Image 1: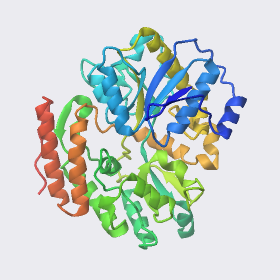
Image 2: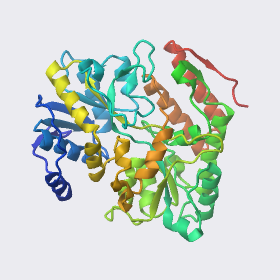
Image 3: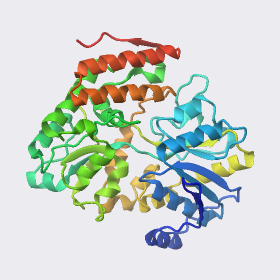
Image 4: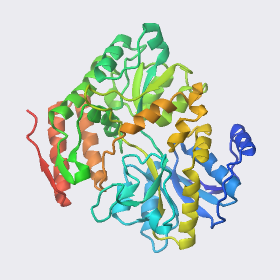
Length: 450
């Protein structure tokens, strides 16, 4: 495998860690893959990248096919994808698309339907479809299983509740299922500055506080739009459910959380967990490996994982922050077929169990029923499998890139105390409505909060 890192240099034959190498040397998946053209994958550098790299190396070992990885920072990966799909011939074959921009690729016609490239390709029935975001109906502009298969999941990232299992055991508590239980437990453990009851992300960024607010919003029964699936983009963020969610988020931060919540980004939230300064956090599942890393963590084997809480009568609502693999439309046919072959292999049970052993987050439900999920170090797998049933796709429109910055600013200001929750939700909703009206969506507004 060739790995092209962000400086533009190329490294051949990147070796996996000793444990990964041992696993690959002792494992044969028995995959009879076709011999196909080399492909290039453009991908972001992330906590789960190393496991993906090792899985790609296993694919090369098992099939003899060649893959080059072009690895970039988050924003750099998007820029390269945008440039490549608009060129006369694309540089990249497999686009690893984030939840924040895959709709742009679908709506723009920049990725080919996998079923058009290979009508015989079938998505494994055990693969999570992640809010049906792998499908797209170009006529109706919606993501629905009745549409075409546009991508295969690469990393099914959602937020999970992280909590200190050792403290819970001492206090005789069970994992909270409702927001009321979470708040009560956070208050019980809150003893600043030694220990914060909960640490939350409040900083404004490219996609920061908004994404961490989703489990609270959806878990209170709220939403940004009335019904995306039906094409009804009436903005309902500023309804009583949205207000209850934001008021709760702010109350937790002020009465049982970190005193500088409005300045905390994901790295700081994770740091508070691994240093033993926080009893709870609702953060991306990709951070699980850091909790038991003795080089980073003071709470090795002490953190447990659960489905994010919700209010009674409403299902949990972890927001999707996942990654999908789509095939660029402007590449030669032989490279398209070669990319399909990689995705066909990648989605299989054996490949996904290998991904889990490499420290990755599997996309195939079978992996979560494998004995590996019973291992102590993989204790996050079963709660994640349960949480994925409730995953919510916040946006299925390309204009999300204009809406998210509006939400980032409004939420951050409310958490910082610069404006009230009512002011934040009303102003953000007005701006979102303006964006949707500008692009001709069927939209509307509700009565503002008073």
